[in-house]
Amino acid sequence: RVPAGSRDRAAQVRAGRCVLAGQNQILNPKDGQRLSVSRPRRSVLFVPGNKARMLEKARTLPADAVILDLEDGVPPGEKAAARAMVRQALESGSYGPQVILRINAPSTGLAEADLREAFAGGVAAVCLPKAETPDDVEQLASLLASLEREQGLAVGTVGILLMVETARGVLNAYELAMAGAEQGGPRVQALCLGGEDLAWDLGAVRTKQGAEIAQARAQMVLAARAAGSVAIDTVYTDLADLEGLQAEARQARELGCSGKLLIHPAQIEPVHQAFAPSEEEVAHARRVLEAFEEAGTRGAGVIALVGQMIDAPVVARAREVLRLASST
Ligand code: COA
Ligand code: MG
Image 1 (tube, rainbow, N blue to C red):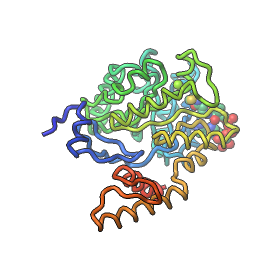
Image 2: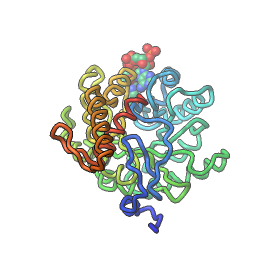
Image 3: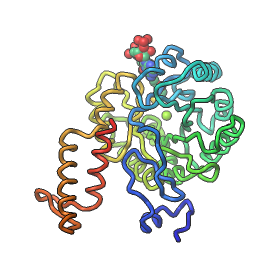
């Protein structure tokens, strides 16, 4: 029997207990089983918590998720007002997109009051910025557990998204993604890259090509996937350049990210397109599955399709492409 410890995912995989997860699927790090994810998070839009108009507008936007923000989208003098505005927005009607609440960083001393004052029903997950140590995550997880008990929710109901946006955060990304599981099951649902903060912390120059954050992006994907969660790419700050945004989103998808952080409603549609498989991908996936099924009837495991090898992971990816294509 494979022990169900949190570090045993590799053993689970070897024991065949772990399903191959698609890009949007989250695995339970305890037993490697797929968690039910109600919906994908391709587009995750920041909405400043101090902007009434935007909080209102966000209710009906076609984003998969919105992050009602108390951190860097809100100036220091407006933090308290923003908490009240976010709570009121949550209590005064439902949101079409899934709602995520971003609190302030652990080091600010604001995080606990943010949660106590702004959290309300309808929040699916809390986003923790500048996460650096597993302890940051454990503390948030235990705060969430007590909030959940107070509100009569099952412990573990509210997920955690972590912003990976400091050098330490990148180096600890796997430990961060694995943390918080003791209290109410796997909490961390995604790692999100914060490219602007990271470039600042690295002393790097932030460029459009993004070479300065490329390693961190790849490391975030590795850490998130090893921990059974998903990776969400950084914001694209040039609001006028929707083509550039879409190209960056495609690249993020190719690297294994399941979505992208956004800052403006106009960015939603291009990003949805970028995360949808292209027509060529879908056509290729169909051919792969047909060839594979045909080979199965002949008892062959590895086959070639017009000169390309097809084996189990190729087939799994083809199935995932068709699943994505039919769900988007
Ligand atoms: N969420 C919800 N609605 C938004 C929005 C957002 N992030 N950004 C813009 N909108 C709304 C505007 O309110 C406006 O709605 P209206 O015409 O019905 O009044 C509409 O979308 C068009 O907005 P536009 O005029 O093009 O932009 P703007 O000048 O009002 O705002 C920004 C531009 C960059 C200030 C704004 O998009 C923003 O604050 N984005 C979030 C930035 C952020 O959170 N940064 C921190 C995390 S990285
Ligand atoms: Mg940030």
